[in-house]
Amino acid sequence: MTAIADLLRIGTRAATHSSGPRFFHFVVGGATPAAQAADWVTSLLDQASGLWLTSPFATRAETVVLRWLKELFGLPATYGGVLTPSATFANLTGLACARFWWAERHGVDVTADGLAGLPRMPVFSSGYVHPSSRKALQLLGLGRDAVRTFTRDDAGRLDVAALDDALAGSGPAVLIGNAGEVNGGDYDPLDELADLAERHGAWLHVDGAFGLFAALSPRTAGLVRGVERADSVAADGHKWLNVPYESGVAFVRDRSFLGRAFGGWNAPYLPEPDDEFVNYNNLGPESSRRARALPIWATLRAYGREGHRAMVERHQDLALRLGRRIAEAPDLELLAPITVFIVCFRYRPPGVPEADLDALNRRLGEELVEDGRVYAGTTVYRGMVALRPAIVNWRTTEEDVDLLASVVREIGARLVTTA
Image (cartoon, rainbow, N blue to C red; front, side):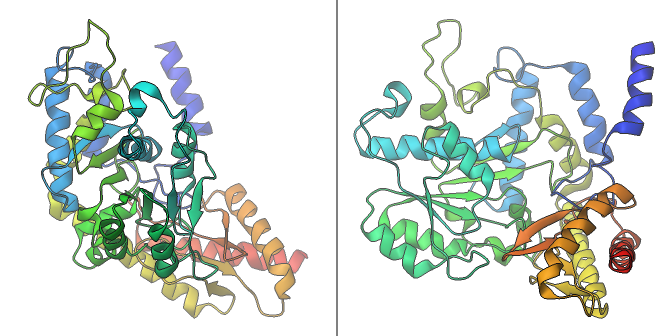
């Protein structure tokens, strides 16, 4: 017990409080009480969840959780799915299925034979494409920079007409739609992307790491209209679902692609895939897997659809409240419309030249982290250094977002004065 006591003593002082209500810098939710307790149970039971044979309990829990999540997001019940460690792995899973689909159209079984002899797979997106999608393409041997982006402004919004023209001459292609962009919080028009995919025979993958949860509320569901027509969808539980790390999920419209992209190992000790006795390590990139369905099961069972809808709406309300604080302040400037929970703004005091604002805000971000009362840092949006706090923790209150605004102004004023 001495080792555990030391770990707790050191960890509680040294660890970043990323599960706390004033952690705004990245899209990291906390852990609801039910999810946190279930995560302890997960470690206690220590199930090998990849095979039905090793844990029917964990396998059944995953099957139930996937069904509940499809209902939550409005995805058809016929979609296949698998839990993953993260949104990056979920994007990897969906794009691996897309790669199999695309190679099959060139007469190649890419699972068995690889990419040798194939042309480069066309991958198209808006300027909102996230590094996790690029990383997935990199790991799949398709190239991190293979994505062609079609944008109509410096924010990265999709140019639908230009994409339509490119698809007309590309042959089979993969589209990446982005349900939520990390700097401004905007969404690609998924319905229009689904129309293009159907018209040109393309595969539509939706990266909905955090943004897919907009489906939970009538206030925000329009942002993800069309996701139910996607060929593959990725989401992340340790963001807006507020379950502990690690927790991602991938859905695929034609469930057979999961087994074809990840199964068929020719290992005699492993059972063949079965619709009833599912072996999830045949449906995703992992073999050794913890029972990550349990925290998701617990939080959905404890709070239900209505509890999570209320959380989505409350976080949007908090983001709008912060937006009002910014609008009322003479030294703050909102840089992007508020959609769900991201608020993109910068410190812009009167009298400071435009050319000096980037350096001022970059220093402000460093000071915020050093100060410690709130955790928020900088990004670059439309060429400007900005703050973009993300409000996704179930414990965050009005007092927390008010404190963020006041601390930004306090530190900013001090920096201007000392300069």
